[in-house]
Length: 464
Ligand code: ATP
Ligand code: MN
Image: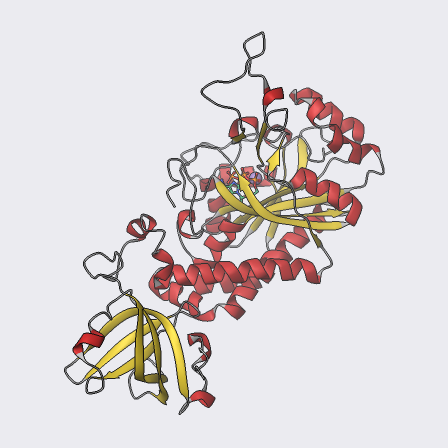
């Protein structure tokens, strides 16, 4: 009977020592001398490699020649306690089958120590490196943690559409979806495009957020969260923006802005703790390789209460800082990452939740404060990242909401279904959006958002 495969993550257990094992994976390195060769085998289940020991008396040159970095193997042998440094067990090979070779002259990961920029050009293979293996295992665990957090709290996971006909959240920044022939567009008499001939009979785009539909869910199921891809055609080539990113958007009936802040803080801390509990090897690797303050930063976020203050107070601190910012600050401006990071990294030295932003720089659906100038918005600002969460208490008053929509000239006919939440059984409610990749940036310490999603979509980049 064929021996069952053991994943490398499961092999470092004392009970298996002395047993016959079967392992499969990709060769990371091969070294040795005339008598014995050592292969470092990795199967992606853990950052740890398994050492395969080859006694050259048992294998011919012919058999061993195709075993080079990147080739894939099926190895059977005895698991023994290791004398060598850096590992507790190793396999003494009895049989080796090569599934696939990787020509050393062609395999892009033949050498170690490639830059992250180089590896971005090799996104189809970079998951085979220690760094990206670590990042994408952490990404998985964080996704799982998010579902667990909300499920344990009784939130319902809601799937909101990716194709939308509402463009109220930011028309210019959306990717249009069409089946019309762009080389021969059907026209109305006045020369505009005739979208009645399009697939949905009207113009449609990829969603920038699931929030509006999420509010429909929250005002029925009580507490929901979405977790899915969102798309923004903003041409911002920064280390923190993607054209396609994943967003988590909880929305809760009867929550006010304080409940919303409490939820956001508990949620992020839960995710960070979960990653520390389940991704220890990977986080330690990233801490040692890239950023040796990563672990300290993760632990410090866990133990500190997030500072809560209003935008207006934040502006006062920034103005009094005496710092020369690239973008000058005054009441009414939208905060740039440099301002957010000053508050978090230099002034308070812990995460900050800024609330009550000027109405003019925030979305139409946010609850208006009595001062007539500000809305009940909240942004969570993080070290190294800047804004990680944006959210608000929502305007639940029908007349105030309509007033704001009209004042901004948002096309009403597209919004009738959203407005009915305020017409029929309206309730106070609140929610927020967490950018999944920004959370992963924080937890991994990676500096560029292109390095925490397997196949990044950014301007001029959709190769893989
Ligand atoms: P920013 O000011 O950083 O561009 P935003 O205010 O436009 O962000 P929101 O509309 O509030 O973002 O979206 C909620 C969250 O989604 C943000 O707090 C952030 O974590 C994330 N996010 C927004 N835009 C992007 C993007 N282009 N790429 C990756 N994550 C993003
Ligand atoms: Mn925002």
